[in-house]
Length: 122
Image 1 (tube, rainbow, N blue to C red):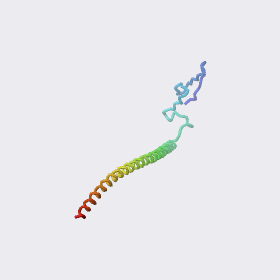
Image 2: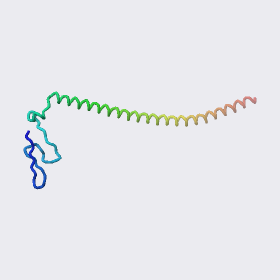
Image 3: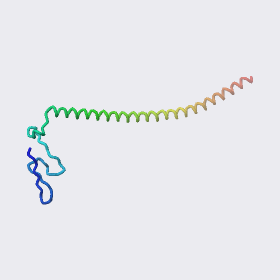
Image 4: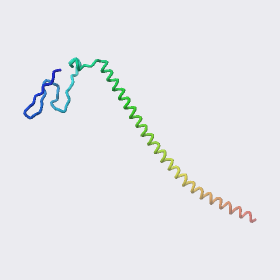
């Protein structure tokens, strides 16, 4: 492609001619869609493109593994918290039940003792 030729207007804004530019300075230059239209120095061989694709895929895979690992750590932590809360709740319920049970058991023992005393007198 031809080099861009910038012209400065009275307002100080540069306008580019002979290029594929949108005219907005923050936009990047558009690249030609046909590779044969590119300058030879800008062209990359098929092997280079494939190598770059492989590198990008391996990078994406590594990022995905890291994300999955981090997510697994979060879920494990969440599960540990849930388990701890569940065990605590079960412990509280068991203690409350044991307290009730011990009262009942005491009452049964008391009645049994009274029956034994009554039978012992006869």
